[in-house]
Amino acid sequence: MSENNPIALLYELSAKYCKDHAKYTVKPKNIRKFSAAKESRRPAAGEYIGSKEIEELTHPPCVTDALIHGIVNEKNANRNKVTMFLAGYLKTIDRGLEESIDFLTAHALNTLAKFSHSSPRDIELSTLTSVRTIFSQDKYSHNCSFARKLGYDCNPSCEIYAEYKKLEYGKTTIDLPEPEPEAPHVLTFDSPAELRTHMVSKINDYVLDLRRKNRKRQIKPLLVKAPAGSGKTITTFNWVSNSGLRALWIGSQLDLFENIPSEHRPKWHKIRGRQGDVRRNGILTPGNCVKPDTAAFLREKNLNVHKHLCEMCDSFKTCEYYSQFEDNERHWFVQQPMFLFKVRKLIKDFDVVIFDEDIMGQFKQEIKIKMNDFLDIRKWVDESYLDLVSVDAPLRVIKPVLSLRVLIDTFIHLLSDKDMGYPLSGKTLQV
Image (cartoon, rainbow, N blue to C red; front, top):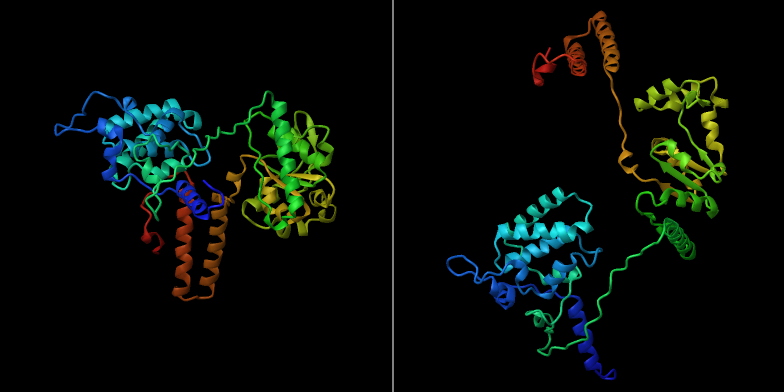
């Protein structure tokens, strides 16, 4: 095609656009074009013509690709999507539900399981549900656009391929050379050391890119993901310690501080919560708070420990708990609750913030209320009741206090080991 011919160039670009943005879907009238549909056609008796099983049919190239390779584009495809695609195809060519379930379950276990972390039992149940859903709803059928989105091969060997290449503005079909399929890009490493070197290079590239583009307002998180035991934590600790950047590391427990390589540990400061002396394995760790139990009780009740305890403490000005936050040189290693209640206000003082794995589920706040708390509240309510009676308060003022007393008794009963003597209802508050 001549490069100097603008009309030819326009047709070429249009054909490429239609190829890349195909919206054609197999309609009922096109089903007969599939060889597999002809081989699966049922007579009035309901039996299939011939004795071909599903794997013996002549499938279109996209289906063949899915059956042989499973997933060819992990960015857009997963096990469930492939199963739904194949179920829509089998439904379209008029294969039976039970036969399709058996066939696709075997395919999921033998071909697709390696792309999934689910157990065989979970795969079987998921496949069963997906296939039944596809077969039970009319809106699902074989969809060519879906096949192309999943990355499967689409070429002239398909009986309805020509329908893709018809341009909306003319009857001419322009055949473009088929691009060579790209092999999936999979990195392999001969040793854990090579993997760690690769992780460090990727982290460096990420930071250099941020500095080069000065994207301070568009910083996106970097996920360091690798198999368990490959050295993600050690590698990241090494990188941070030698990067010249000040880091805040947020872990699920302070014991993980020991994972820091010994040569880098002096550069890190373990930020501890309020605690007394702790002896473990014969080693005494001095406490940093003279009233750790009271502090823990207030925190458990979601009360401000600084306001209700520290400001009134005689050791406030020399408190080691507060002095640890004055370290502006070393990296900090903190536990998740400490980050939520204190350190997140200081996050601007750090260049890098690292969230260790398995902590996101802990980002919730809990307030514990025990029976002794309700017993204390009931005592205050009783004192209020006696005060109201002593001043001859009217009944309309006293009744809400009595209702509150009944409700508190109910909570105390629920927290005890005794069985409820009556069902809870609106009458519970009636005096």
